[in-house]
Length: 233
Image (cartoon, rainbow, N blue to C red; front, side):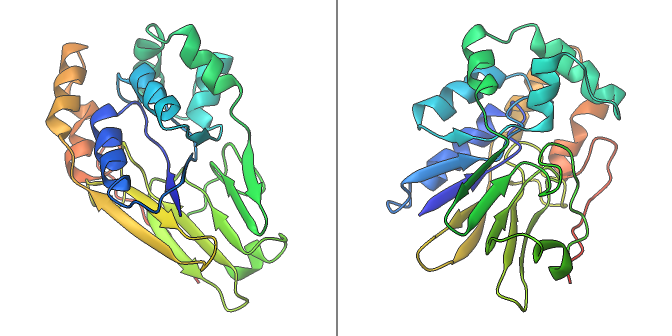
């Protein structure tokens, strides 16, 4: 059994809650992170330490790339304000961990990326269809990036799953999310977990951020309040 997590975004309380829930299932023998360990919340080093502790495989996310490259996000001033604040405390150990994160993970008929399967770093899959996936020679597809939990089964037997976001859900459910996947049976189970959101909010307040930067954590939305959806076939 594989536990698939994504978009932690420096939210340690959410990650700890998810890991605790994962280990209630004694059959989990591998954890794969679909990237974006960094961004939005202050506990990036601590989150990376936890991933190392559990021997997780981590895929490169766009926020992780922003951090490593120093280029910043081309779309969002608020992302850059948060990232610049927290990047000042990133350790060499964390940088080294992110540097070796691959762009994708594949095994047998399974492929996992952070974003999309044409652009693994920064392609948003808000609208999905069988015609998109049938060009690729895999059966099971996993990606994050949109922060929207979703699973779609296509008529040709291919399957797409977004496990949602651990640290910043945007699908209207504020609980941390992840997925369980059995490569043997192909079964996918979507999971949601409560966590102590106020502990993250209190840290953001300590750094001087207003409620604009954290009210979304209470709503399960983007910063600014927008709820996102994935449109399936």
